[in-house]
Image (tube, rainbow, N blue to C red; front, side, top):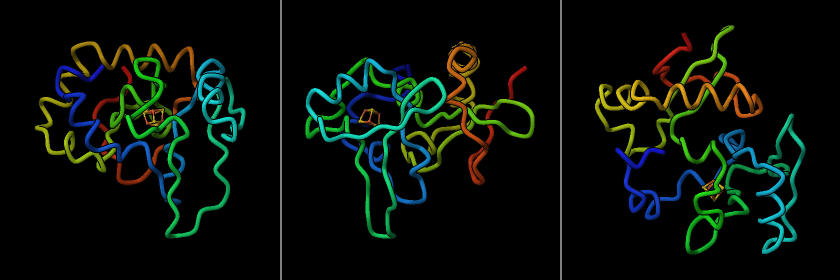
Length: 158
Ligand code: SF4
């Protein structure tokens, strides 16, 4: 969904958004029942928790040094390919509740996107991506996160 401005190659070389520490563990993606089944075929040990209409990884307690890799991450990249969770397809854009409204924010940890001019980041949203994100969130409210401090708000819902 971000191919217009973010090359798949940049993502393949980075994978930062597929590994989590105790401070950003809330960022793990929301899976559908189908993707959970697919992951379990090759990672039967992976554990998930039902969350609203979807599933998130059961991570447990992490200490300051520990990292959690998404169970869909392989040495070749994401095993889910084009079926990866919507969260991951729009990352580093995030949809959050800010006050009583939904808004699209940006995760600053993605250096590639965070270095882009604001006009480009907002331009892609205006070109239809924002509508697509809000529409998906209407059907899948479980992907909407509470506002997290430090995430710049790029666009509020109309
Ligand atoms: S589902 Fe795929 S893209 Fe998303 S965090 Fe896991 S490995 Fe990364």
